[in-house]
Length: 376
Ligand SMILES: *Cc1c(COP(=O)(O)O)cnc(C)c1O
Image (cartoon, rainbow, N blue to C red; front, side):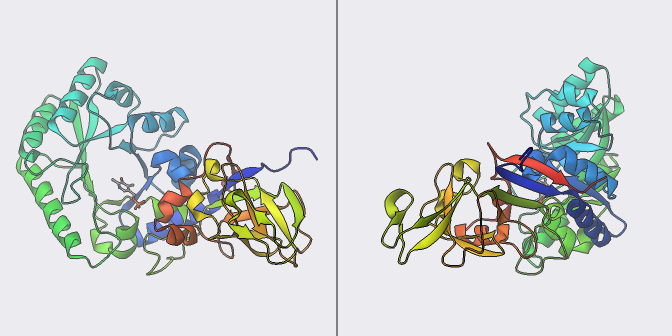
């Protein structure tokens, strides 16, 4: 057969991305939507997701590094792009030249951006990332007055255009957690302090996916969702919010064979056949993003039903038990490791492993080929 489907694949549904963006836009009301496509679009493809999101009504894109931002611009995306986590010696000039909005978390960063703007001979667009209680990235309360003073000077000199103030929540996935209101109050104080310096932000934003879906009072001028865009609920215990998972992780059966009662399967023979059985070999392992610690604790969808993984997950492969009801499963058939409705869900892997689905969808890599359906 010519052009068979890839052996191991993440299939990304751009129509699901568009659907999820529309759900987020409904929740946002009058606020705009910035879609976060950091880490290559949570491993879904930043450029393709970015394009689909803009087409579906998102206004801006957000990423972590300058390199990620410049790559989106190089791919022809003209929407505003914000990046928010760079070392202070990063190549800010490349971002300024590509009209990337740069978030600064310190005086040192702001000085470096200003120096780059002077060198390039272009005004840099800068946002303030303020720390309101996450105590991770963002301007600390102690340094904030100095940052404002320097920013005021740079705006006056037209070295910098002041775009936005934004912050990030620590407990957004617990919508009634008291720290959320504390962070909101500190955020409002930061905005007020900037205005006292004559620094009027064009917009302010605070809400990630969880807040965008559960705290409409925190939408401000723009919401900044990531995970929900990819169709995974930021608070699965509350609701799926009508989101559709965009990623299907699948692989094609490499081998079907009989295993006799009493035989052990895979390294260490952790699974022993009680009866004669039929097994299928799936060419996906921990090098492809199937965690080894999942071994024997998950099902794949194959031949119209769930089939349990048996024995250890290896670097390149895993085995599933078809039992006596092999349903005509044949070599070349497609097994779904996780995907959308009706299939095993990334959340199940996360629950089993004691992690979050964010980490699960970021895992497929290496030999895994990414393909797309939907979109224009
Ligand atoms: C990753 C990130 C987001 C998106 O968070 P989700 O929980 O995926 O919606 C928003 N803002 C910042 C600053 C981030 O780092």
